[in-house]
Amino acid sequence: MLKTLPDRLKREKDFNLVFKNGKRLYSDSLTLLYYPANQIKVGFVVSKKHGISVKRNKIKRLLRESFRSFVPKLHKNFFFVLLPKISEEYSFDKFSKDLGYLLKKGDFLDA
Image (cartoon, rainbow, N blue to C red; front, side, top):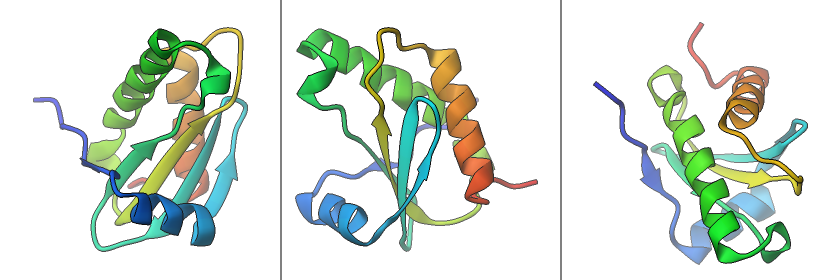
């Protein structure tokens, strides 16, 4: 059974809270922002600098799927925001590897 994604960050107020008060972790292809909360929520921010809407939507799909694979292992409640870095190529494998690195670095994963 696939674990579904946690609730998404949708409100501007929540995004502003994470951007203003949250902490950041960096990898080669991603920046992870996080802020303590009472439940897990995730948001994805892909700017127009990444290209046309088709490309931005593909990046968001890749990010959602890579985050989904880590949801069962998360043990802390936070608001997460994922920001991809601009690149020529985007791949599920690269996002998954870097997201795993960031979540371990931030101690969000079960052992």
